[in-house]
Image 1 (cartoon, rainbow, N blue to C red):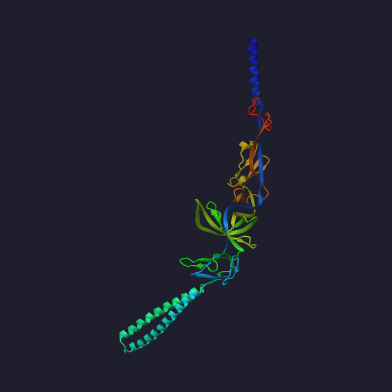
Image 2: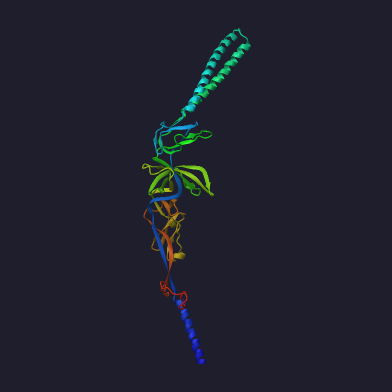
Length: 393
């Protein structure tokens, strides 16, 4: 029994020793520092914000009529090219011609009355000045003259209005352009009441278009007139169109608690691919620098540390807030720089380091695992089968 008990204790000690060796000797770590370097580059530095907008003609005029009546003739249709002053439609003139004749007759009668009363007043005035007629007769002639003058002027205005209304029955194009909408048909009655009915919509030169984009309030602060813009439309997904910002409108629009501002972008359209109403996916370049030196912004945030690098390195710092670090062996040297615009990823370098200079980007520490027992991770096992000690289940 004593021998058996001693054997059990000895086996237990050996098992504990084996487990301890496995735990403390089976895994070791070794640290390795990696110095990441980057170069001062030269090229284009840009940053853009995105928005959506609608393609529209630069000039779009809605042509209507100020008189009510029946559309007698139409001379243009959709996509018709028109010139300024060209007749595009005519309305029935019968009713307005009758009104014009009535106004003309009233005008002629009032004019005759005005001429008679004027002469009568002039005669009575001369007689009154000589004391040959009474004041009552003179005042009566003056009253009749003033009344005839008022009627004459009123009928003259009514006649001019009737003439103008008759002229409105001939509808002409106010601009050179293309008819993009026709809202009436021949024989249709239009009523010009409190608002002018729209008969046609005419767009000016379609080789010059504009995009009205809705820019989020978080991005509008960086948008300025003259900035470069690129955009695409779903109709031509492989084409990229270019333009520039021509207007930043101050009135805000709120939709579903989202505040946006309208930005007007001009764009050339020589091939007439851009059509009114297309949705544009817009990139507005708030930063757009060409042929400038820049470096990764991360390099400007790097600071060497002896705690990380070890006591054998030499660190030569400077008092500048903006600086990059060069590495020569175990010597890290700070170089003061003057920076410009940053797009968050890269920062413009105005002075301090030349193009092509290698600077430290970052230092990372990697842990290498050695003497670890390996396991075939690609070998599948059943969760219901027992596994060897120390293996993951």
